[in-house]
Image: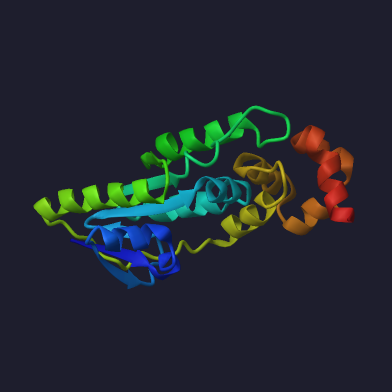
Length: 207
């Protein structure tokens, strides 16, 4: 049984466990996904990585790139060590995490698998490999990083600001056309779209 693994996963404990389980791990530079098992592209994230990539919007890009594969899976690892979310004031907003999980499943059509730890992740990958071996399905490894067009690049820059999601970024560009116009706009002009987030946005620019 063979599992193709991205080079960035080389020092992962998951890989060590796969080798212990007798899996043939083949390392390649994968532009998309962390593991390719037969015809399934798999992105693996620890809970902290999932939350961080959600905050910096990297996860949205990765989910979009995974769509190049008909079969795809997101593994969220570490339920034994860390809570995925809580509703305490000091933690990340629980509904924000819930919303991202729903977006992943319903909008990106990407199933999510929750695992307890790296050993659990490795055993799931092994089971997938066993199922694939029976069907002997494989896919091309030549998926590409998504190249953003000009409008998507502008939207991506605006989304890097706290509290600005895809819809808000699109509305800002629809009204102001350019990033420089958004940055130079008066608070009163931004208020219509950013509402209570206007002062935070302007303060970040001034800082």
